[in-house]
Figure 1 (cartoon, helix red, strand yellow):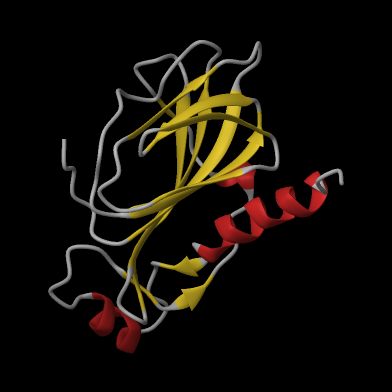
Figure 2 (cartoon, rainbow, N blue to C red):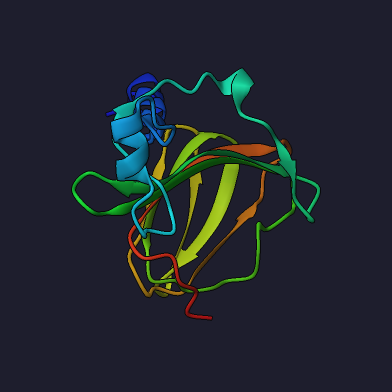
Length: 160
């Protein structure tokens, strides 16, 4: 059975839109709620994030990252979403661990993935899930830049 890449791409965009809970307070009541002693904003409003409005930030590897949103959901979980462009032959960073879990939603490209002792390849429409505390890394092994969204959920702390 051939995978339905369009459906998986739709999932990528839908999960990126999950971050579509705005961090910008719209009323005085919302400003008071957002100014609680939490380091990151409360994400209490829905919001759209057209791709062309996401400002790219250069990465040391020649790629770029487009931050989408970060903060705490109304249910308490921390979430951070960004899109990464990874040039051919590059890694975003060395293999590492962190306390949060994350989903990588592959828009295009071909990535070599190592996670929790497993090794494999993933392409456009694929999804990678990395559990909390798991050693993981990836590399663009394609001939073109890879683009993927990262949806991180949970405490943001590096474990080395």
